[in-house]
Image 1: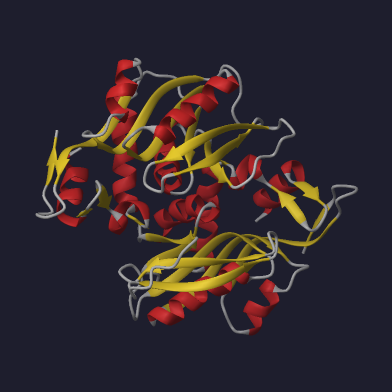
Image 2: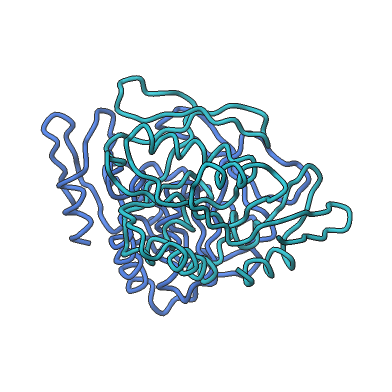
Length: 192
Length: 192
């Protein structure tokens, strides 16, 4: 998606350690018009697929998932919650996700009320790098017996293994911008 | 807003300690069509006011704020982040908010890049009870020299002091549903 690439190129800030700051339009300040066009782009890519529900993860996924839902017939958006503790009463799906950025594990939970067996789910998130968060959301769908129809990502770090791994496993992954390389010294971002 | 009251009455679960669970449509699973009509209701209430930006707080505020922004000319949505640590380089506004639910303090930050002096800000959030989160967002606007034009809340717990305190201070507060009382034993919710 050229518009998203242009915004990354003009406003993104590359930091050491493979960090890309896009807070001015994606994950701190939200450009609603851009989100709307991102939703339209995913709807075009996934047209013909049955989507009963969109699953994302707090916090940065929520805004783009809600705006995207408008392009999929206003389906419900469920956001997985990061939780310091697990409710062990069996009412929640839970996975443990490793954050490479923070070098820590955290619990992710979704109430069993909101993802049902046989539902067709579209996973949406802002970033895909190592794929830990996305794999966690897939695992939640697997636990529920739901079908992952596709995965819509805003920015894929193509130089990290998450995207290739998901495509190898046969998932229909639509990343709106794929970064081939980026340089913290020059600030240059190269797209695939 | 009758539709929101009806959803609370039919799907809300009242728990001990003044807890109201509305995860089926508001803050875990998101009913996008409802969010859209909530945005329209706020736009009607705040019509004639200048709104340059919407400020909310992660995570549950983000979806309703993004959907509301469509009714305010697609203004940017900024969400304050809950942060375990403070960046002390001066690039962020920060406040400490006390969570009565969790009986703990937490840091809330907004990058100085995204709230500017003189901007007219509408604060949006899902719940108002003691008002700690809302007061924190107001304080961030005060730090920035921004003008709080109004406060849009989905569900106000009218039996807790946050709403009255904000109205006493002269803020234009629009709560779409105000709960007068609720009973964990019977499950009954009475609206103001």
